[in-house]
Length: 121
Image (tube, rainbow, N blue to C red; front, side, top):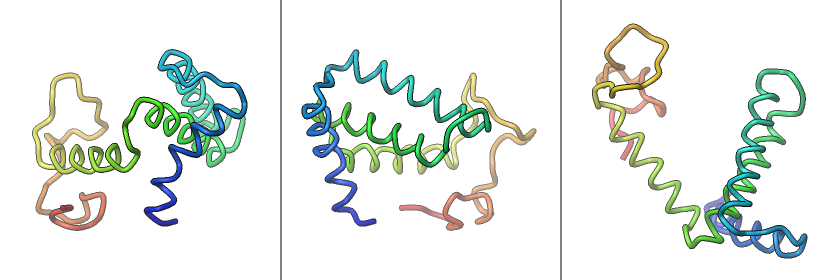
């Protein structure tokens, strides 16, 4: 998959919404997104559905929501990278859910980094 494929996802998703008569308004798209996320959670838990297909549905609805409201997919992906970079070395925040009894991953240990590198950007 290329960057061009990612960039095309939003416009194609909005075209699909229009072709199928689906609303692109924030309330309808957000409600659909929540339904798709719930279906993805069920599939991951093994209750029903294919996790990969459900993940694709989540991306389709998210892409249509972003595109319909002028948020380019690539900008959202860049923001996610910025968030990862900022949180990688930040102390835990109030209300953060975690499974380890550490104060946070050791930033100097590449095995604790999502990409195995000391610095992601």
